[in-house]
Amino acid sequence: MALGRLLSPAAVPVYDGIGAPDEPYRYVAPPSGAKKTAAPTTARATSPVTGGVATDGMTLATAESGPQFSLFVPPRAVATGGTRLVVEATPRAPADQPAGARIDGNVYDVTMTGQGPVTLTPQAALATLYLRATSAKQPPPKMEHRAAAGQPWQALDTARGGQDVYVSDFRGPGQYALAFAVVAPAHHGSRTPYLVGGVVVLLLVAVVVVRLRAGA
Image 1: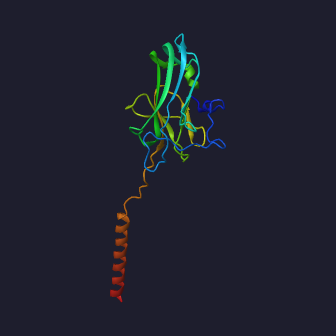
Image 2 (image 1 turned 90 degrees about the vertical axis):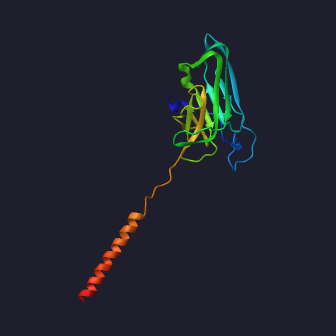
């Protein structure tokens, strides 16, 4: 999905507005030194199902200011049986890390419950998912997704949707998180070759001085 379509004004939630700054990030498992906050919140939306598809568009967002999780699913984007589709997002503490990256904040577990299997239709290409980072530090994080806990994380194409908000396409049920790349410490190499070279130079100088004195 092209990220240009993710940033349409109608779909972007308002964050960092004048007079309404983001509250401190709410962690499931706060790191050392984090500000004490209320617990992070969940999000939930429903749609009637008619003819095997969810007929209503759904917007669900957590209750923080600004929301730490926000999802828009357009009408007829989800196929399932029964008469009702329920979409829920639940924050969880990270249990493991993506390769070469470290999760920033919570993992959000998204479930979609109907009667029988739940699948995305082509209309789901218009679905968008927003996550708020714990800070606005740069370089930016990537949004990561996996279909179930324990599976490998997969980095998604990610765009910046606000001061500390990032947006990507929606891949369906599973876990979503933001993750910053882990920067390896600079490797300066061993100083041993330089020390050995310096000793050799000093020895050569000493030999030259001794020979010059002997000749004199």
